[in-house]
Image 1 (cartoon, rainbow over the protein chains, first blue to last red):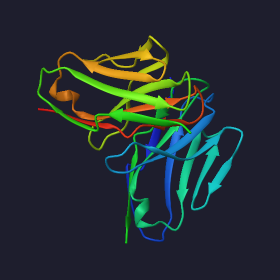
Image 2: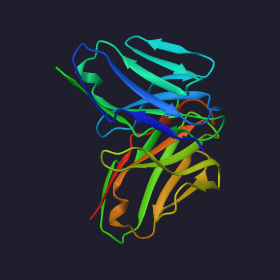
Image 3: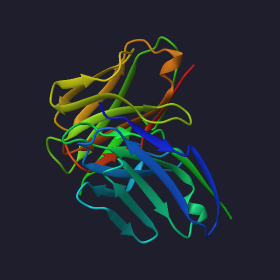
Image 4: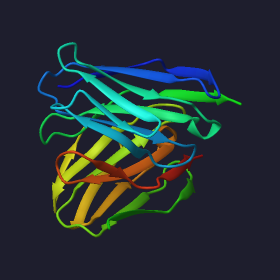
Length: 111
Length: 111
């Protein structure tokens, strides 16, 4: 089955800096890659996603890039703010199978 | 629009007691439904998923069971709770592909 690895497990940046979280997947047939943000005590919220026919997608300060050849995708957050502090999860999906999640990255933005 | 509800929000139960957590989805029909568990500071562990009424797939052997008595209702149960059942339980739904949406979660503490 699919395996998703996520790095780093923790990331601390200064307010205004950029943050990058990387994930690799094992199943070359995976075609959907979402990113979730989970704040303390809440359920994960979908923040951005990308499909395998697209190489990059942006939404204001966040962007996701996908390299199908290398089987990795990344989340980029620019101009980080304290409210970006949370745990971020990547995931991959193959067809109609259940999502496979990465292990999560705890992002802390220092004011 | 679609919404997903979970209750209770928090629960403290003694070891050996039964458990029933409920999840309902509004605004869609025939969703795929999922139960995840999240230990403190850890990732998302898929416990059960259902593609239809009465159809339950278990991802890991454990002390828990799931049922889907109605199209948009998913219940997580246990006859006798263990200390290791403590955690944050999340329900989620999707249409079998692409976006998956999470509920607010139930914090379970077994004492």
